[in-house]
Image (cartoon, rainbow, N blue to C red; front, side, top):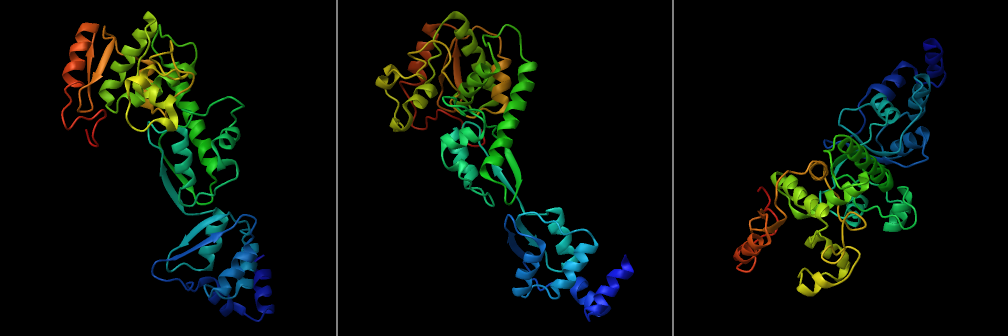
Length: 339
């Protein structure tokens, strides 16, 4: 086999010197390396021709023969970065292994599906597909039927992906991750919970995610919501009102909004809203399925990102007067970064 390969080289007039020049000598790459894109449907011959035309390598036919000899003619689409000092053998091996550039993309807890989709499509190296062009087409690509909402079904995390990954491929990965996490937490859930399905727990987790960013409060807020559900009390949580208002919400939640009937307004409807209202993280899912015991039925923001919990309406009203009706100038409904 090796002898036959050398005979081919000699017949091309290059001999061993041509082999060395074509395969061993460093490619013409600058200090920052060479970044180039391999499109879907391309092949090794085309890639080598383009790089030769750019002056990066010489003797592309010898390189192609070498690749056939090593059975490394297969390539993967995506963006590649060749460091300075690489030679043609390095190039062929990278293309064959699919050593494309990898990127990181973070989906944030509490985001909506719309925000997650926009973040994914804007990711560096992401291929924007037709299916990812709208909320409806993306939902169908993820397997949701007509009338089914993808809200809450994307797991917020940092994802590492290859250049050339499509928006839908990454969303499918995040969707599968959410299904896995929810299944794990559901199997380890506490007893006597007011959920009939894991989906109801996912809905509850999204409420918890939007109510607090403090890990220490999640199970306590879950406890309040669970006790209210068991007693037939309405959840009365502002984030559901805001979600139900959609684009009509201008950042100022009013008393009129609390009375406005929407399928999500938990001041008006009984029980849980029909779908999640955000992407819940594992902490919120765990809290929803492992609520803290206690007797509190109310909570109110204290202005520093934390909440005051109360067991009686009288105590709650006093807390409202203290923390809400006499707000400090630095009032915050959610924790500051780093709290």
